[in-house]
Amino acid sequence: MIDLSVVVVSWNTRELTLACLDAAARALRAAPLRAEILLVDNGSRDGTADAVGARLPRVRRIALARNAGFAGGANAGLAAMRGRHALLLNSDARPLGDAIGTCVRFLDGNPDVGLLGPRLVGADGRPERSVHALPRLAAELAPPALHPLLFGLPAPRRAGEPVDVEAVRGAALFARGEAIRRVGPLCEDYFFFLEETEWCLRMQRAGWRVVHHPGVAFAHASGASSKRRHPAETRIEYHRSLYRFYRANAGARSAARVRRLRFAKATLRVLAGAPLAALSARRRLRWRSQRALLAWHLRGCPAGAGLSALEGGA
Image (cartoon, rainbow, N blue to C red; front, side, top):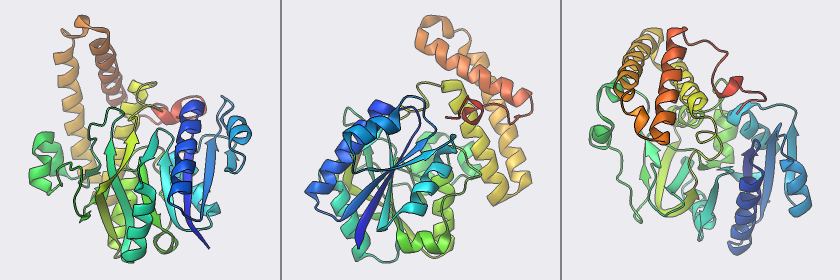
């Protein structure tokens, strides 16, 4: 039986995807594991699927006619997987060292773990946020610097014992096949952002542990496939997902409170950022994306905006 199915979802990130698949294939050979790699091409127009077929013919390709979002693309791969476990791997991420083998062995030795997230580092080796608390009103009111203290988030570490957490980031996410069958796949109501957070919550409600493993690492070029190319649409899509999460898990009143609070924050950022926008191109780009987010709120948060509204999606 196959030990692991690696599922990579891509949309118009041909070079990133090829590098990701190359790195995954090398890691699997070194593990060694009985494994398969699946590419789900979310309606790309840059020849990603053809390039992968030419360079990596052993990769199973699933070509979708349109961009189904990350959850939709990932679910297409999960539906076709043949492994005992799955690794959902962003096209801008790659394993370091024996990260894949270590995580599979950890899942095999801990049958109550449904989801497992490694430590994420940037291209320069600096730690990225690998875990987070579930969205809650207190987190909206407290400064981000206080979140680790208030919500018990583990500090970034280069090594250490695995620890149970509320949610892990989805850039590199290991999932037990049995847990997927019992809990179900990712929720496709989320086009992009928080789909893995909602999955973590459902896993825990069903009795599965969600664990962060700081002893293994994946490099992650954060935002390479969306944030850097579409900063305004990315901000809008995140907020759309956030409000959806609150409505589904905390109720309409809580969602309305968070929406009002986020609107107030967006207003303050646009007003405060206007004088600084002239100082650099980076500040201007950030201010324009903040202004677009504010305008989206003023229009009533319509559906026809964000990553999902781009031609072909995000």
